[in-house]
Length: 425
Image 1 (cartoon, one colour):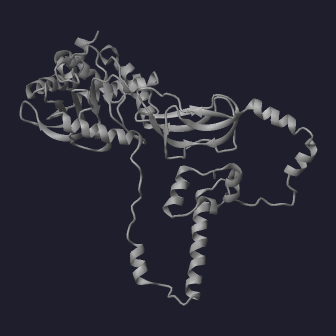
Image 2: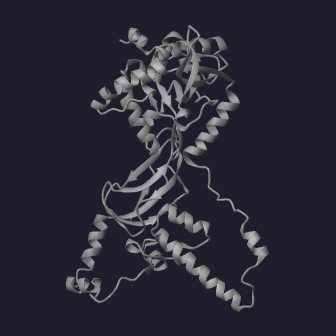
Image 3: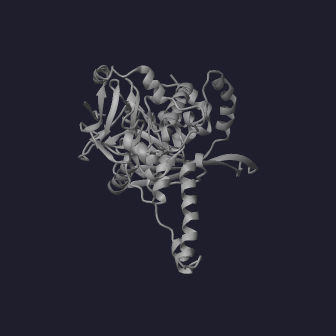
C-alpha cells in the first residue's frame, strides 16, 4: 500500500480544491493515467498516476480542500496485485469465467447504488448529477444507477424524484390529509439559496480585487476611438492570416499599438515596489488579456509584444484564450504581466471601470464598437465605427496628463494603423 502525496505545484501554493476525481476506490489504474483534477488559485491542474495499481482509498472528497505534501489517495502497486494473484492461482479459470458470465436469458438489472458504494466506496456520478442530488436533499446511494458499472445518470435521479412524488401523494390522502395545503404550498414556493463555497480562482480573484481597489488609488480616463480604418485593414489581412491557420481579431492590433505607445510613455509600463519608494521600469511589454473562463477570471499575458509580429501575437492570443477558457493556463503564462486589456465589448458592454491587475500600473477596458454618425473636417456627416475605451491608472505615480498622452499615442496608431509601419523593426 502506498500513499500518493499532493506534490508541490509551485508559486507558493499550499492547498487546492479537488474538482473532480477521475477514478473511484477499487479502480485499476495505469501509469500516467489522469486521476484527479485540482483547482489552485491560478489554474486547473490534472494529476496523473505515478505507477500502475489499484486505488484503495480517496482521502479528500470532491469539492474539499487538499493540502500540499498531504496524502491525496492510497493505492496498491502492480507488484502487490501479482502476489495476490499467485496466492489465488488454485481457482480454475473456467470456473471464474462461468461465474462471471450471465445466462443468455437474463436481462440487465439496474444495480442499486448502495451496493456499488459498498464494493467500491463511492457511487460513480458526474458533478452535475451530484449537484442535482444535493439540491433535492437526496442520498446518492438510494438511487439505482442505469449507467455503466451502476453509474447514476441524470434521468435516474429525475425518475427517482418522480417515483417518490407519486408515492407521497396517495399516502397523504390515505391518512386523511387534504391533497392541497395552501400554507404548505406557499412555503414551498419560498426560494432556497444554493450555497457554493468561494474557492479556487474565484476566491483569489475576490481577494486580489479587494486589495487592488482598496490599496491603489485608481485614475479613470475615458475616450472614443474611430476604428473605421482599422476594421478595413483587418478585413484585408484576414484571408492572409487564415491561409496560415490563424484567426486575426482586433486584439493583436490593440496590443501592438500599446507596445509602441509604451515606448513613448514607459512609466505606464512600470511598477511600484512593495515599500512604495521605488519605480521599476520594464523594457519588455508583457500584455495581459482578461479572459472570462469557466473557473473564474484569468489574465494570461503575451511576452515581449514589442518584438512580435501581428501574426505571432494572433497565434498567442488564440492559444491563451483557448487555454484560459478551459482553466488550464500554464503558470508561466500568468506571471510577469506589465499592462493589461479587458475586452468587455466582446460581451456587449459599452463602458466599464476596470480594476488594475496589481502590481501592474494600468489597464484598459475596451467597449463594443458601434456605427455612429460623426462630422468630418468639412462638417459633413459620415458613418464611422466608434469604440469606447476606459483606462485605469495607478494614481500614486501616473497623473492625468501622463495617461492622456499615452492614450492619445495609442489612439493615433489605432485610428491610422498604417503609421505603425514606421515603428516596426
